[in-house]
Image (cartoon, rainbow, N blue to C red):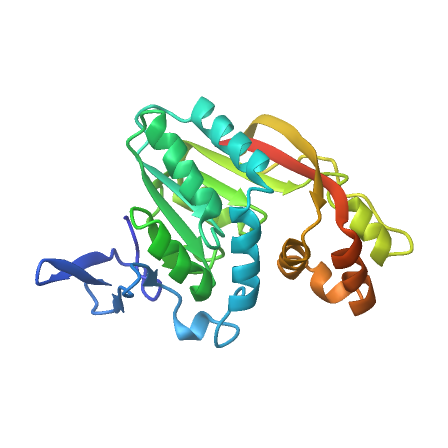
Length: 277
């Protein structure tokens, strides 16, 4: 991985001990140990907004159980298809921004390998809880705890990026992505989860249907992935709510009612594929 130091921006190189990688360090002496699970923490203390930022263990566990059950596989499959259809054959590196516990990253890695690509995948997230699980499960992927607003990668080092819901800074996307590199984004479509929003708000609003223009990028392709989510199991309904903002916007009575009678809502994802100018 083409990491750069999050403190001084010098290049990081891997340090070995007994033929095993132990840490990443720069020429100025800043060093970052590799965790036993395999990820590296490149989020300095002075750049944290809390002691343990990102999703907590409960949210991570809920999302992991829900995604592993396959309820969003339609999105994952289409992300993989779009990326494979447009990625250059000689692409060497791909970064998943806000990768969480690695569900989409891992499935994309498998799809790319099956399609004949020889490419290194990296995952970035601010949550250590999520990356502990991701690094254990997907040992061939390079995971780093870091902020998407200050990514610890060298300039023009990535051939492609995936950003599913994750916030980021446009200037960092422009910096890290190679010229002609691909950026595939996923955001909520117009009717995403609208049935649940009607339970919460007196006048629920639809999501914006306009695909945004990004300075320094050319829009190559956009589409909607739409289907319906039907949950009957109380545990899966609880996992779904726990991994979304609905966990604290719905009343306890509403959540109990859902777990007893089932949950039905729209799934509507907006995909947009850009090329770096």
